[in-house]
Amino acid sequence: MTTIEAEAARIFSDARVMSDAALERLAAGDLRDAAEKAWCATLRATEALVLARTGQRPGTSTQASRRLGIIADSDPSVRELEQIYYLRQGRLHGDCFYHEICPMPGTERLIRETSDFNAKAQGLANGSPISPQNVGL
Image (tube, rainbow, N blue to C red; front, side, top):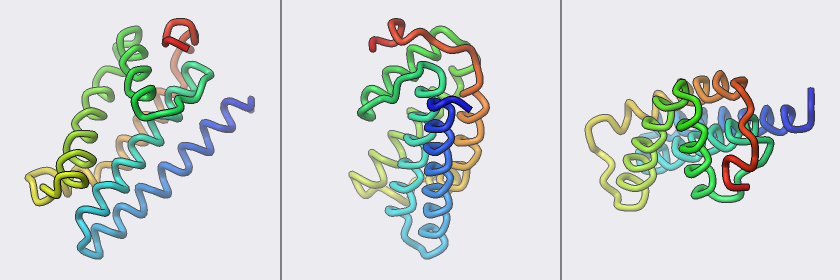
C-alpha cells in the first residue's frame, strides 16, 4: 500500500466514524448535530476520494468541491456522486446546521444514507488517477 493509499484509507475510516456518530446523534434526537456530523463524513469521504484520484489532499472544503467537479468532468462515473455531494452540502450543512431548518423532508434520510455516500466514494477512489495539473494543484 502506498502512502497515498494509506492516507486515503485513514480518511475514509474517519468518514465512517463520523457517519456512525451522526446516526448516534440522530437516535438521541439531535437532528442538527446529526446533520453536521453527516456532512463532515461526506466531506471527509470526498477528501479521501480526491486524494486517491489526484495524489493531493485538498486543504479546504472549497478545494474538495472544486476538485470533485473536475474529476466528475473527466469521469462520468463520478457525476452522480457530485450531485449527491452538493445536495448533502446544501441540506445538511447549509439548511440544517447553519440556518436551523432541520425538519425538512429528506433530512433524516440523508443522514441515514451517509454510509452509502461514503461507500460510493470509496468505490470510485479506485478509478483512473487524475493528473494534479488537471485539478489546479
